[in-house]
Image 1 (cartoon, chains in turn purple, red):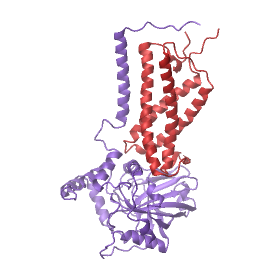
Image 2 (image 1 turned 180 degrees about the vertical axis):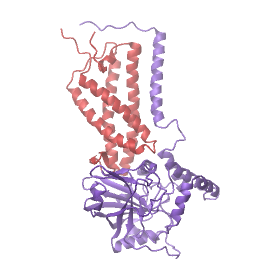
Image 3 (image 1 turned 90 degrees about the vertical axis):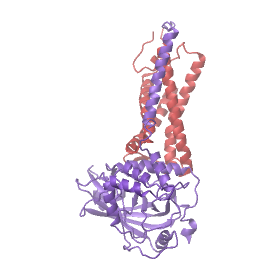
Image 4 (image 1 turned 45 degrees about the vertical axis):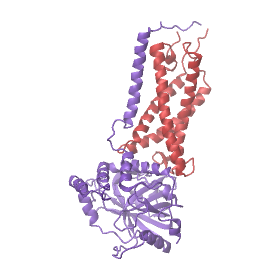
Length: 360
Length: 181
């Protein structure tokens, strides 16, 4: 066996040049990697910067969600009536019952904020499908969402940051935002024309974003969904409230009395209905299908409920459901994850709706 | 006289280059998705199944390696260099195995579904614990950066041997057939 043939060694000058070339190649690769990670675009909107804006606008409360911080855990089940099976092949729409975990909340970053009927109400629901799949949806009581894009939402968060002098948002900045965002102004008009209901139990919750349902044949339709309460609508009473948890207390008392129910209504969009703009309501008269009933019969504090440690990511969808082209959806998924990751490692303190409060 | 094998087997080379492409894609997707809003969902949807595919392939590759004869290091490599090369191989095998497992474990601890495609999903391998999630999430990032650095060192060493030392280290793993001289 002959020894390996070895080319003559390079002289030191040429070796140095070649080593330099190698260095440049490696730097380019590392630079490309950092570029992908956004290191060279410090002004681009990222999940981290978005959550920073939430923290500046609403404060940082360790262990709590950066938005919809005040809440309570619930559980129960969803009973499908089978009517949704022709719209989507998702297992959840076959006739039968699936267990759910949920969370009622108020929008905003302060977990100890005083209950008020005009604040945004949220309901996150996790459906546990029998085959191990999950469907998660995070809904609010607004009829439409005030922002078309993540950037609009972010710019509004920045414009509505409290002024350090007054402790309130700067009205000039808010006015400037409105002037440059007519879609938001239109959406706020729709939102203000909808009077909120008296409590959580008679609140309708909406998906806001459009999604797509995929049927067994592979056909796809645009949809939005909402939870329509079985409890009758009642207006907010004018009486002044002294208890800062009064709306949650009422919810606890009412769920204790009897299970609370909502009909899951799927609205089917027509091809001309926008799926990428959550600020616009679809026209009246679109086909609506009642696909089943959500029953919530158990309520507990976040201290014991697993809902606290669940990310109600709206893009946890079972087979048979898919995101639409709404740019908010992927951004919500990214930002919820960022908020979840930040609070996950923080020490948890009792929620305003404490175990004692729920046990009263 | 039978000449000594100068290259890794065809299967070993195929797995090496397939995984090289997958791991580089994975590192790029990983660093991009955490900074992304609009593409986040798409990137995560690729990241999860690609990570599991890498986990499966690295196990196959490791087992296959135990049953294969490896070509010798070239004589140009000093014993110290050989030790470093060997340790870096162990490090990369360990990271390629551990990183997807941590990803799987951290999603389990977050009680987040580990969807691969459609209704195909993996079971959780750890209990629901957000503190555990937070720890694993950080570990995932740190080890991913370490893997990137290991790749840079590996690639840099190969370039150095090929362009400066001008030995035949690269030909051992070259995707094409190289006959022993």
